[in-house]
Amino acid sequence: MPAYKRVLVAIDLTEEAPQVLDKAKAVCEAHHAELMLMHVVEPVGYAYGGDIPMDLSELQDQLDKAAREQLHTYGSRYGVAAERQVVTVGRPESEIHRVSQEFGVDLVVVGSHGRKGFQLLLGSTANGVLHGTECDVLAVRIH
Image (tube, helix red, strand yellow):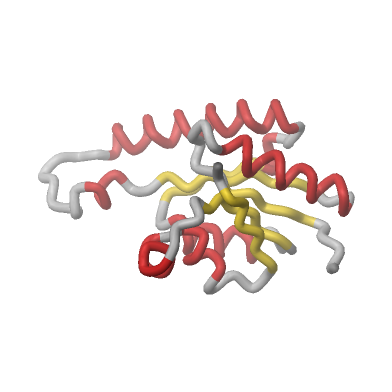
């Protein structure tokens, strides 16, 4: 088993996040690795297909601020310093790939709902992260 030095855990800030964080923390403790937290805020325009004739920047800023506050709460609870907490805006898979490369991450930890068949192939963020990340990926099954 490779020794991990830097572990990035990408969470969705739901009540399921602690399941993923607990597993990531255990891996970090076993490997004496540094834990990083990440959350990706999807652009508001995505939800509306980009066809809304209004400025959504204020709403986007509010979502970004709320995500930073929630991530900071998890950071405090899991002992992760502010400089190792990342909130970005974009597509989760591509942002996780970018940040993992930028910070030299050895392992990415994401949650997975354990869907089967086509749902897993077509819709899973975990699957998207797996295909395109250069480091190891641990998908934690959400119960």
